[in-house]
Length: 589
Image (cartoon, rainbow, N blue to C red):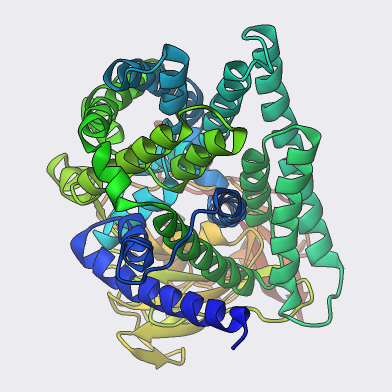
C-alpha cells in the first residue's frame, strides 16, 4: 500500500467523524471548533489514533488557505444592507477593540507567565480577534436571530478584525527579533497592510463579478471554481504586495456577493461546502498538532489568562470602542460576551514557532488552551444570554424547497421567497386578486412539505412561502404585500415607477399597497379611470395625478389602457385625504 492510500483513508475517516460530530455540536450548543479539535486530539499521538503530527509549517500553510476560504464565504454572505448601519462601530471594534484587548490581555499574560512585557503583548495580540464562524454557528444552533444593527456589528467585526490581529502579531515578532524598530516602521506596516489589502480586495471583487457575467465558461461547474480562484487571487496578490491577504479576500467576497452574478445559488452552495471542508480539516489538523499533556502543564496560568481575556479585556475593549455609538447596555454586554475565539488565534500561535522565537512552545500551548476555554465557556451560554437580555428575534422559517434561474446567460430577474404571516396584507388573498407589478410573477407556493402550483383560484395562507420571479426594482413593491396591516407602516420604498395591468381595480391598489384613491369607485379599473380622466387626449405617456399616487399610460391596445405606470408618493403631513388631485397634462412623472 502506498503512503497516499493511508493518508486518503485516514483523512476521509477524520472528515466523516468531523461531519457527524457537528450534529452533536449543535445539540450541545458548542462551537464546532471544540468538537473538531477534540476529534483531532483523539486521533493524535496521545489519543486512540496514535497519529504523530508536529509539522508546524504544514499546519500554518493549510490553516492560511482554510481561513482564506472561510473568510471568502463569509464575505459572499455579508450584505451591504447589514454593513451600512454597523460599519462604524464594527470597524472601531476591529481596530481599537483588538488593540485594547491585546494590551490588557498581554499585560496580564506577562505577569502570570513571568515573560517580558513584549512577549506578553504578543500573546495578547494573537488572541485578540473574534471568530465569525464560531459566533454564528452557535447562534444558528440556538435558533436565534439578532437585531439588525447588533448582528451586523458582530458579523462585520468578526470578518474584519483578523487583519488587525495579524498586523499586531507580525509587527511584534519583527520587533522582538530585532528586524524592525517600534514607531514609524510599525505604522507604515499597518498602513500598507490595510490600504493594499482593501484596494486589492475591492478590485478583484469587481473584476470577478464583471468576468463571471460576461464570459461564457461552457460548464456550470466552472463558475464556482472561477470565483474560488478569484478569492485565492485576492489573498495571494495582496500578501505578495505587502498588504493584508485576509482583508483582501473578505472584501472581495463582499463585493462579489453583493453583485448581480449568474448561477448565484450554485456558487454559494459550492463555497458553503468548501468553507465547511476547510473548517473541519483545519480544526482536526490543529487538534492533531496539539498534545494534551503539554496543555495540562500550562492549564493553571492559561486559565488565569483566559479569565482576564473573557471578563476584563474584552468587556473593557467593547465598552470603550462603542462609547461614541450609543449602544444600549444590554447590547454592549452581549457583544462583550460574544468574543468567541476560533482558528485565527491558533494559526497565529504558530507564527512564533515559524519565526524561531525563544519560548514559542509555551506561547502556542497557552494560546491553544485559552481558545478552547473561551470557545467552550462562552459558546454554550451565548444563546441563553441573548434570550435573557431580550435580544433574540425568531428566525424566519426556511422554505422546504428552493428555485433558481439556472440559465448561464445574464437574466435581469431574481427569484425571491417570501414567508407569509397571519398579519400580512397578502394572507387570505386569491392569486387572481393580487395587484402585482407587471414584472412580478408568482412561480411557486409551498405549504408545509407540499408544492402548490399557483392558479388564479389559489388562496395564499399564513405559513406559506411564495416564490416570485421579480424584475429589477420590483422587490420593494412586492414587499409591501407582506407589510403588517395592523402594525406600523414599513418605510416606503423610493418613489419609483412600477407597471401594473390596466385591469387592476382601485380597491386592489388600496388593499395591497396601502394607498387611497379617494372619491373613486373601488371596483373601477385603472383602464377605466385613465380613459375617463384623459378623454379625448388618451395617449401613451399621458399621466394623472391622484395625490398619493401618480398614474401614467405605458401601453395602449385597441383604445384600452393595457399597462399603467404607478408612482406611490410619500404621504405629506396634514395632507387632506378627500378629493383627487388635478390631471397631469404633461408626459407624466
